[in-house]
Image 1 (cartoon, one colour):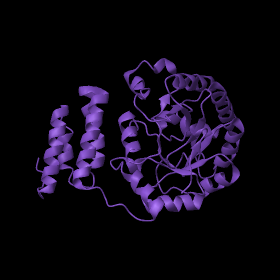
Image 2 (cartoon, helix red, strand yellow):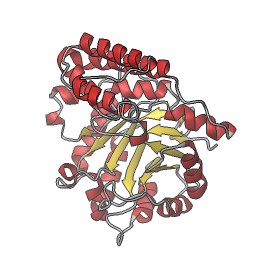
Image 3 (cartoon, one colour):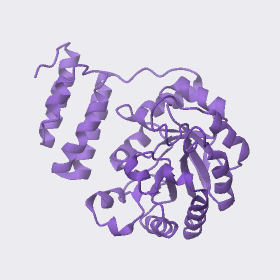
Image 4 (tube, one colour):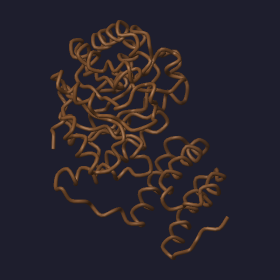
Amino acid sequence: MPTAKIGPYTLPNPLIVAPMAGVTDRPFRLLCRRLGAGLAVSEMVIADSKLWHTRKSRLRLDHQGEPEPRSVQIAGGDPDMLANAARLNAEHGAQIIDINMGCPAKKVCNKAAGSALMKDEALVRDILQAVVAAVDVPVTLKMRTGWDQHHRNAPLIARMAEDAGIQALAIHGRTRADAYKGSAEYDTIAEVKAQVSIPVFANGDITSPEKARQVLQHTGADGLLIGRAAQGSPWIFREILHYLETGEHLPAPSLDEVERILSEHLDALHSFYGEVMGPRIARKHVGWYLQSHDESKTFRRRFNTLEDPLEQKESIQLYFSGLRNGEVFAA
């Protein structure tokens, strides 16, 4: 199993929680770290600091109680603005700054940010140089394999990044045009790994321990970023880690453990976001946790009407009690 390093930091293991907007908040990051992730990257903070007064931005800048190193992703398309965002995040406790050139969302790409930046290689160079020069902490870059299947320029940008002083790369095995459709390809990631000396982390469709080992072997990557597969299954990190270390599978978490993890996650969300937003944010997480149990979605529809933290907790207890007793939830 590879040893993962980012600048001066040697990670406990090479499995990283990929930054996901609206998902990798502090409660989720702490949970994934506890369940085996070696690092968890924050959801992206918009580069325009004039927007940081919003409640959403203030929460995204909250790293209280997080283990080191703390990695924060910034998103934008202006070199000076991104450099300033990097400085301010470092002042707020970020120990690694990650630049977003991987998000394919239209609301990001239409503002010449995220993976849209890969179309403008001169601008990419200016951004990389500006951000690296702005801070004393390591700067990393997350990107895709290219703009579309005819323009896979990740190897060129990777070399540019290394020259600019970027400390590590994460590459999602799809182009911006692919969004999340089809299957990730890893040949381009292997090509990047062969051309640069800085650490390279592979990302995309890593949904099982076997797939994790396969991607590491195929790409020669220094580690893996895991995103959507951790939604509702944060224990995937310990499962992959155990498999990479031993070649054996951990038993799936018991019903009791799933209930305990979910209940603790609910408590953390309610505490972090408050009694109004906490229950609303919790709904999507509960949907992910229960998608393999509540196939009819009957319980989840009922859960999504609950707005009181205590009612949410009690409904989860009743639901799992019913599962253990072989009962079917009725609306």
